[in-house]
Length: 347
Ligand code: SAH
Ligand code: SF4
Image (cartoon, rainbow, N blue to C red; front, side):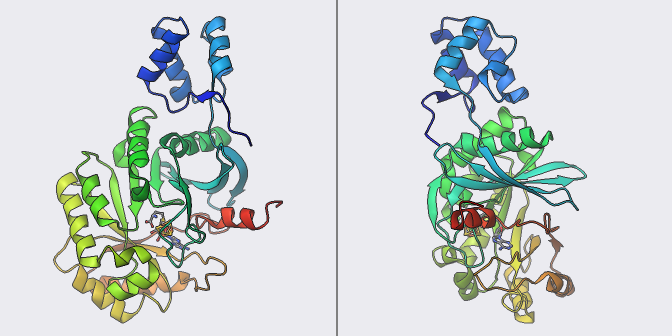
């Protein structure tokens, strides 16, 4: 798909829109109307901004467009209503997003990069490295693309799709502010998940945000963690836990430690003991994720063992929840859909 030459209105601030409207010879108050159409009504095309004067619409149409990621494929889990989207960006790159339905509202899992440079051994997103960062409007555009397709409003965001959010720091921060101020999703309803880039966690704590932080732990053993996640080599466990504590101290927001349970690899008695040592006397909460088997990464799914692992943790005084496996009947591990599409583009 050739890149559109027209400038994208989606992502523009009210100030930007005022300048655009003025440059087209119109009164500034039209910018507020356009802003409401773009963000309250989530319009898909300039011509949908119905109460703007015809001449302004024509001038806008000549120079501007509204672009959200284009939906290539939707998979729906009939049992729990989870929808997984394969989305195409303006330059043809593909990302994945997931819409999950909960009692408290709809939650969206968004991608922050095309691919991922971190290369965790169990993850489909990092299999072929990072292609590029997403812009803040591309991250936010996933919300609108899913809302428009599903007819549902999204009230919660988790940055747990493809990519490492803290490896795309500025754009992710702009996305958080934009989503909060413009799309009206509260910061307390946004969770950023990181593989654990220590200096960036300290930076994030200073940003005066109220977002939740999830740190991907996966092992309390330094050497085992390094085998699972390359990023652990330069971001050792003791420093990572300190950074997590600092985030809590600075923001008052609880830090969750994600733990993808891989049978026989990180769910043994020794793993439990090491976790106990790691979190001794510390505020902690573990979020256990059943491993989504990713083809050709040759790891076992440990769905059955997650309960046993949780029991063992509980006995040692460690608190955890098991992440509900949304979309168990579709390829819900991020990166799987894209990988399949890249392998056989015609499907
Ligand atoms: N890059 C960030 C956020 C995206 S991954 C991070 O790593 O935290 C979101 C979560 O999904 C991480 O905890 C990651 O470890 C986990 N994950 C990745 N692949 C998985 C798989 N195949 N099965 C279960 N969890 C997986
Ligand atoms: Fe990247 Fe997160 Fe996947 Fe690791 S788990 S490769 S950091 S997306």
